[in-house]
Every structure is written in C-alpha cells, then in structure tokens.
Length: 91
Image: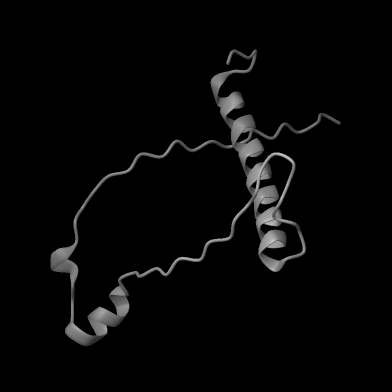
C-alpha cells in the first residue's frame, strides 16, 4: 500500500487503527460472552470455546525449592517504538 505519509507517520496511523479495532473487538467479545449480543450474523457465526490452561508459577516454585535463576535462558527481542509528535499551536 502506498501513501503520502512518511513511514513513521504511517506506522503511527496503523497502530492507532489497530488499537481502535482491538477495543471494538473486546466490546463485541464481551457482549457475546455475556449473551447480550447474538453469536449469529449474516456472514459469520461466532463460537465460544473455553480451554483449560497451565502456566509455571515461578514465585511459588522458588518459595518451595529456592532460586531457579540457574535455569534462566537469555534472549533478545527487538521492538519498534513510535511516539506521536505533538505540535503546539503558536499563539
């Protein structure tokens, strides 16, 4: 997709749209989960699925067996941060 925006400006615009869409998704999901909104539409049917999950509770494990830092694995992640420039109006 080609726009007249500079890359940083386009990225900011995209991320803002994503945030708005995620907020709307959360509203729809909550409404469907509560039963306030129907699951059937003209083009799609939503299905609620509940899955059991497990996670490792490091604090509880360390309280029981001690320090687990010997098992830590170092890694690296790259994040592209973007900040909106605020232009103050000249008075």
